[in-house]
Image 1 (cartoon, helix red, strand yellow):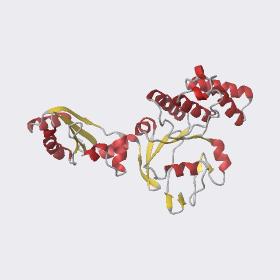
Image 2: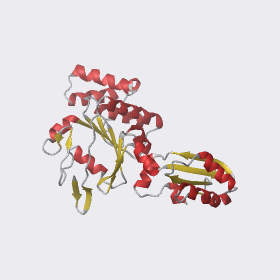
Image 3: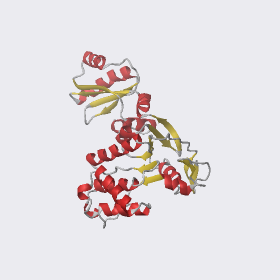
Image 4: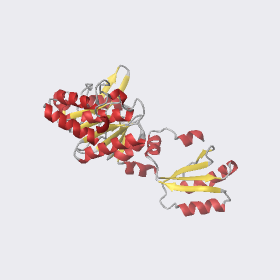
Length: 308
């Protein structure tokens, strides 16, 4: 797909396929084309060229059929603050042509599922942000969609509310719903996604499972020393062992480096540091986080590298 807004090329040949019943996390820097891609796939924007099919329907020629097959939860909640949670669900259910009895039954089931039953009859304006986001997601599930689009669904939520939504999304995928997720939380993509797609310059740059993407950049070795004067000596040891340039974090008195050498072990790392007389406080050798993968594969420095 291609899409241009004046001189801005939002999509420059995006080619994406998401298997049924999986969660695909669409990641990328601001301006990478994620929002435009979602707008095309949800029939809100017409592409300049190329074709897209959602749930078997062409997004341009069969837009109405696409809309019947999908649900969208955006960054802003769509619920009415003056209505109660139960009234909101009843309203949306009736708009979706559910009969009154079926609307009430479905609303009650979703209120229980999302832990909102106790507050169901209070005006939504009295609810917390996390509760409102859960209600917004519940409205998208009144009629179970074939494909669910989630645009940063847990932005600003506390960990408890975030976990509640993550559990709901994973359960939907396990029941056969296809989920396309955009998020700023890399932990969210790591927790939920069957596949992660990095969008860069309006097209797919890198894709793979979270484990596959982490394997591409290797493990991360990090040591914490007792005094700032020992940082250079620790870097001298870490560089040859890992085969990459160490990054210094003077605030934490830490030195870190990425290694793709599968033979490097933590005992060997500690022995080499001890032999060099480095006053060691802590040492770790761990897989990279998805945040580190994202920053490295998109060409941005990590916070530690920026501080070096």
